[in-house]
Each structure stands twice: as C-alpha cells, then as structure tokens.
Image (cartoon, rainbow, N blue to C red):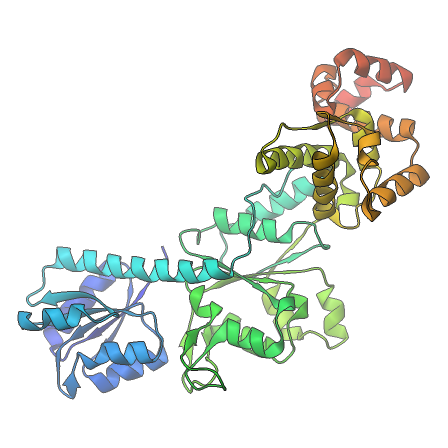
Length: 457
C-alpha cells in the first residue's frame, strides 16, 4: 500500500501528538500545523491526502480551511474536530468536509474516517483518469511461442514489481499500450489509476496544461482551476504514449517530476507533489534524437531506467497463426458471430507477409475478412476477396516472396516444433485434419524426429 500524507492541524500539543502517533501506526506519513497560517504553508509545500483540522485555532476559525482547499482546487479530504456539536450541520454541508467528529475522539471511528477519506480521493482520481483513458481491450501481450516474445515476457516479469520509470520501445502497432496496461494490471499500483496521455496529440501549451493543470486566471478563459493528469495519477501510473513527440519546452518539467516528484500548475506560485510511476512508450530511436538535439539527454537517461523492446511481427512469424486465432476469437465476440478459422494455406500466406503495421494491421485485415467471408473456414481466396490496399499488398508481397509450398512447409515445421513433433497437436494448431497433415509431411519430406529435438532444445 502506498503511504498517504495526513496533515494534523491542532494547537493542543497532546492531541496533536496522540493523533500523529495513531496515524503513523496506520502506516501513513504525518505533517503537523498548530494554526491556520502554518496549515496553509503545509498545503503549499506538500498537498496532503487528508487534513484533520480543529475548529478552534489561535489565528482563526478552522472552518476557513475547507474554503482554502476548495479555492486551490485540491483533492484533500477534511475531517473537522470540534467540541461544539451544534455546528455539525454547517460543516457537513461543505463539499470538502468528509467527516465531523466531536472531541474526545474514538480512535476506532477515527481510523475508519481516514480510510473513507483515502477511498474518496482514490475514486476521484480514477474518475478523472478514466475520462482521459482510451479504450483498450484487456489483452495478453505475450501470445506466441517465438524466442523473441518469450524473452520479452521474461524481461517484463523481472521488473514488474519495480516502481521506477519504464520505457517501452517498438514499432507502430506492435502493442506498446497493451504491454503498459498489462504491467499496470499486474503491478503493485493496480489499486490506483493508470492515466493515459498521448504526447503527439496535443500542442505544447495543451500538453503542459493537461499534464500539470492550471489555476483560475492562469490564461484567458481559465474561469476555474483544473488539476493536471500528474495530480490525477497520484499513487498510480502515468502512461506517456509517443513520448518522442513531447515538446522540448515541456520535457524539463517532466524531468523535475521524475527527479523529485514536484511540479507546478500554470499560474501557480507554489509547487505540489505527486507520487507517480511513469511508463513511457515510443516508436522513435530516442538516443538518435538525443544526438540530434530533439530530445533531452538527461530526460532520456531518467526515463529509461528499465527498457523493454517489443519485437516487430516480421521477426516472430511463427507467432502469427496464434495471434490470428486469438484475434478471430475476439472479433467473433465483438461482432456477435461464429468464430472463423484460417486454413493452412491462409495461415501460410499471412505468415509470409512482413506486416509493417504489425499486430494492428493484422487485426484490420482479419476484421475485414470476418465481415466479408461467408463460410467459417477462411482460405487464400477470402484474404484477397475484399477491396483495399492491404489485401492487394498482402497478395503481391506473398506472391513475390513465397510460393505456397515453401510458406506452407515453413508453417508446418513451426507448428511441429511448437508441439514437440506431435502430429495430432500440430494438426489442431494448424486447423487441418491429421490425415491431411500426414500427407503434407510426406510431400515436404519433413523430419518428425528433428521437430521433437527442436522442441527439446
């Protein structure tokens, strides 16, 4: 569990010390203030998740504190302490006040109050984060049997529990966002929110205001303050997609967040803090961009504490049949139709294509096939039956680079190797009768014993 920051505002030293000890026993960090002035200073220095405020303070009424929190557009939840029960109606009507408690405190109730406040904060961040999150289907990013994808899975699992920055590199359509989502869902911050930011989709000014937020009056049209996505991602993960497109003027501010977790809203004089893990993705060679002075060197070394490289689909051709089958299953669920299946020749044709658009392009091709193919078995004629550049390119490159026999032999060898030379399992993987597979093994003079040894190695 990530530690929360609890601010205790009370001029009674005994109560302050007692509450501080109790909060620390709950596993949270404590800050203290004895009057409104020091409480406001604490807000400026490090925004607390929860503030416990006494009504009677030496320099004013503690009831002024919620208004200050609201005016600064902070998410701090407030618990008001008082010895006067008559003001409860006024206090509980205020939006920022989560609880009203009379002295002396019952600590069992107090613990519950703090938990409720933290949950309210968490839910608010999740609601804000989901407004910015693109629709991503939950998918497993390591489908396949190739050494390249198995190596990626091993490397990812090694760093799964870290909360340091992670840089995911890969070509367009290779599944960088899917891998980032899987890391989040299986990592230590899953109870919080993952906030997505597409750095290429926003101008410099918009990206800055989206990331760091702004205060009322910061620019023309800023009629109220707004928290940035860095704040929204507090205790969770900030996913920066297409990091290489981030404006050079914004990069130093991101570096500051990575180095000391501090940032400043537009139009604000005071810094704030956010406990976030950053996962970034790019299809650019950032080191080359550093050399060309298009990306900051210090940010590159900070953001790339751990690096993951997703292999392009052309380097894992043996995985294409498995990916295609999974995509066809998803499409059947999405479109409410029966699942279609590729025959051996169709799989060989797909495996012989270089897929410059990677998995995204494969999905687009298969979606068109599902919508245009009348039968449940998809053949070569179905792959070329629809109109469009992709279909023509598939057929042209396939015809130039492979003949059907060569591609089919390669596909069968891969399936046999994946299944340890077991013909029945390989036939099931290829979607063809066992008798047909035996005929093709004989036709292409495939060594079954060699397939078994390949599996063992």
